[in-house]
Image (cartoon, rainbow, N blue to C red; front, side):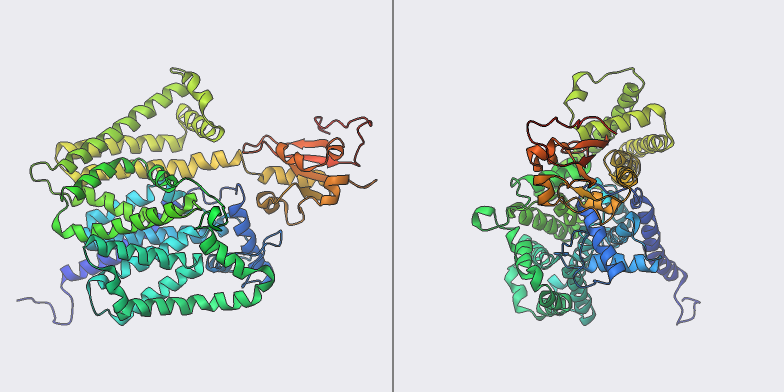
Length: 593
């Protein structure tokens, strides 16, 4: 009989309760550290700086309902992400920079990784939970979007959280009211982040899961709890949609809503927008490449499902995860518009599937899935180890790539040169990566000798995390500085000295670093040049000069040439004079002042 007082927990129970608190806290802190590498890296291209401009408009001008960017373009999507970023910016001094614009994604990514840990641990065990956690934050496609000023990570966090929350409800006729209310709240916040697509993916994944169990998915329509969740979500979303539609009539927001939610799904031949149209296999390719090297384990997962080699207790939880992966893959493959970010909701369930492969596969008689898994893991580690030695040798001149380096695209060549230089110089981050690689190989190979699958998985997870951190925290920021206009814009402002500066076309990146006073070039100047005694400057890439009429092109003078990488050639600053007729002497557009 226990000597403990009846109203006090036993030491074992108290320790378990403490562990349930400490584990998610430790995971959240660890996720912040690992995912936050490179969060202050400058913006490149259009999407992130435009998002940051909407945040600026909320903070500085108070346009919470329909924020505008520096060109006066309205935010076409629900604004919860921008509201949260604006609130953080106001709470930290009222200033918006790259870090503040991205911190919501970092918070969402860290929280999502922790949710994956806790759900997987509850369903499959603690070892599976930690493996899923590290597999997820070690996936490049996931980690890179945790430091991106876009809505996708926040949307994925809400979607996966509500999906996990309703898992028990799919097998019950009665659901606790608290679970219904929480699920409705999360689903509504997801809609306020990305739109009705959150409801579509949620319902589609639940239907696929029921079909996997050979149950009729339409049975959910006869139950009350799905309708209650849906109603709560709609009420929450309506808090923005209704006033936004009323206030956004001047911006044709209803037409934008149709395009964003239906026009992107339909091909252009059937009335769709035709935007971001790509082949049907695009999402599959991006998913496979974004989760490398873990995707090399997919054959082993397929064998385990096909041959029924998962332990019975793990089958339903793993089917549940597979359903979300298939929902994302099928839906966005069928859609006309396909973007890299669309794969993000599939990565958390994939991480749990990979973790289950190391902890929930039957080993009686060395099941075929286990054999394929072990051989694949050892091959991955051996290849990375050999490749690291080879790249180091190349950097020190002991090996050459021959003609292979000339065949790489500019971005790939840039990444390759950074890695080669880092390994050759043995900079501290690369030394840390090499140490982590050696430890990962040791853990995995000793796990194989001891027939310990979880240990093999731990070695692979260590490799993935080391690779993700070195790539997102070191390699990608260095490469970004070779493309970002942050320094170029400052030079332009110094040279322009208050004179009008224009861009050839919509350019949110340059506008973010230069300021809102760099609008697109007016048509009158593009056709007729600057007026007499007027100093006008143009920032343009080589191909963008085609916007100028031939007489105007002959009047421009190169003032500042950048050497930035990127599509369309490096941007440059030109002075525009009065248009010259064909018989007038041509200005020297290749000589800098």
